[in-house]
Length: 110
Length: 115
Image 1: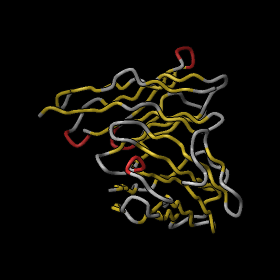
Image 2: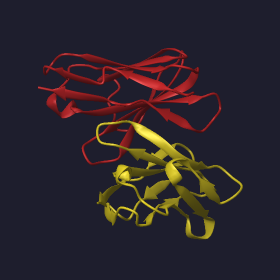
Image 3: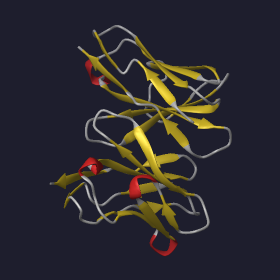
């Protein structure tokens, strides 16, 4: 069975600071990996995805993520956070089916 | 491209009534659509997967007689919550998959409140 963990329930950073959101997965093979962002009361927007190839993936809004097979991780990063980045972030894995992590809520201090 | 809409965006209904939520892929044909449920401050839980023209596949623990899913065409899937109760109040999100792609495109969600 596949699973996704996001160890940080809530992270607070100052605007302009760097950000890293952690995601670990469990799956027997290399899964397809996704990061989504959800603003309050809204649907999900795809930030980036990894299927194969280069393990450093660039996404929208200045986000990037790195797939590390040895650590079963797919951490999301942004070098400089903007106040508008405050939202809920979900890591998701597609192996046999689509499984979402529990989410990490990002707060941004002015 | 790859826009998914949901209607209504929010709905309030009385206990015991039924409510239908529509999910449409606006600019592509969706071979598969998914329905998720999200409780406040929680992640998305897959309820069911539907393919056009065939019966939906429900996840374990989801009552198929309560949550009726109809995938009538390649651009429309509906979720009907029958005999709704307050515990059915939740945020329902649909997604659609285009062709054989693994990527899912999500709708904006429907907030259901049962009084």
